[in-house]
Amino acid sequence: MSPRSPFSGAFHGAFRGVRTRRPALAGTAFATVGVLLTAGCAQGGPGKEADAADLVGKPAGTVKKEALKDVRMTYVSYGGGMQDGQEAAFVEPFAKESGADVLTDGPTDPAKIKTQVDSKNVLWDVVDTTPWDAAANCGTLYEKLDYKIIDTSQLPRQTPESDCMVPSLIYGYGLFYNAEKYGDNPPTTWADFFDTEKFPGKRGVDGRPTPTPGIFEAALLADGVGPSKLYPLDTKRALRKWDSVKSDLTYWKTGAQQTQIVQSGQADMIMAWSGRIYEANANGANFRPVWNNSFTLYDVFAVPKGSKNDKAAMGLINYALGAEQQTRQSEYTSYAPVNVGAKPKLSPQGKKLDPTQETVLNQSITPDFTYWGKNRDKLSKAWSDWLNG
Image 1 (cartoon, rainbow, N blue to C red):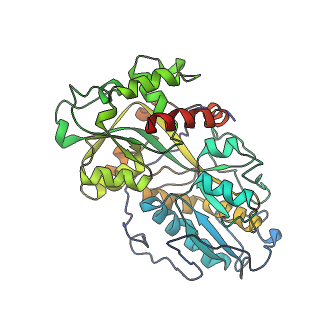
Image 2: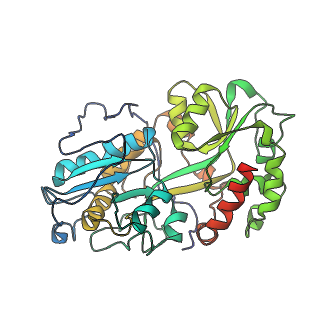
Image 3: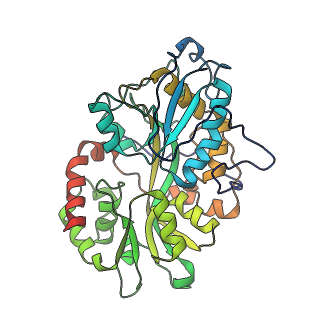
C-alpha cells in the first residue's frame, strides 16, 4: 500500500473527555451492560458463531439489536486515555446494542499476536494497531477483511485501500517541548531537538525494539536530509545522529508512558503522539507542538488471523467507523476522526493539537508505510541494537 497525503477531514470544537476508567460525554451515561473489562490477559472466545447476515449491508455505526448475543470477544488497544475513550465511544455501546460480551486487553503487542497465531490459540479479535505492522503481515498474522460487513463509504478519500486494515484514527507524531522551560526561545526544528547546548534538558524518545516510523526520519532531517530524500532510510547516518544525544535521552515504551514522562517532568522535550500530549496537558503539563516536519500517522483496525469471532470482529470495526462513534472517540481522545461525517467539538487546547489543521498538513510528512512494512525487521534490528549498545 502507498499512502498519499494525510486525511483532510475537518476536526473542530472542544474536547470534553473525562480521564476515568469509564469516560462519558457531558449529560450522557454510557451503558456498561454486556461489557467485561480485564486488567490482565483477556480470555475471549465465541459463545456461538456470529450470523454474518445480521452484520452485512448495515451502514457504518450500526449493528442489529442482539445479533451477537452469547458471543464473547476481545478488543485490544494501547491503554491509557486513548483506550478509555475508545471503550466509551464504541466498544461499550456496541456491546449494549449487539448483545456481545466484549472484553478489553492491551497494550497492542505484535509479538503477542504472532505467538497467538503461531500457537493457533488466538484470544484477540479486534486490535487497534499500526499500518506498517498490518501491511507487513497481511494474510499471515491478520485476516483479510470482509467489506460486505465493513462499510468504508464514509472514510476520507485519501484512505488507501487495503485487504487487512482500515484506519481507526489520525494523529500527529513529532516534537513537543515544555513551554515553561524554554519560554520565548523554544525549539522550532528537529535540529533543535538534537542541540543540547542551545536547548539543554532531557529528551523522551521511543524505547521499543520496533519504533514508530519517524525515529530515523527525525534524525536524518536534523542532519540536513530533505523530506523528499528520506527514503530509503540511511539508518547508519540516523543512528550516528542519535549517538550525539544518547546521554540526554529517556525512553518510553507505551503511549501511557509518554504522558507520564511529560506530566512528571522527566523530559523537557519529547518525540511523542499528539493525543498523549493532550492527556498530559489536560492534567497540568504545558507542552507545545513543533509542527515543522512533524509526521502525520494513523492507527488501523485489524483482525488477528484465526480469530474465533472474525465476523463479529468485523461487525465491531464497522460499528466503530460510524460518524457518531468517531465523533465521540475524537472528543474523548483528541485524535482526529476517520469518518467524513464526524463533527467532534474540540476545546482550544484540542485545536492546538489537531494534526489535521491545514497549517499542520502543509508542513507535515507522511512516512512511507510500505517501506516500513517491507523493511520492518531490518529497521527494528537497527534500532534495537542501538538501544542495547
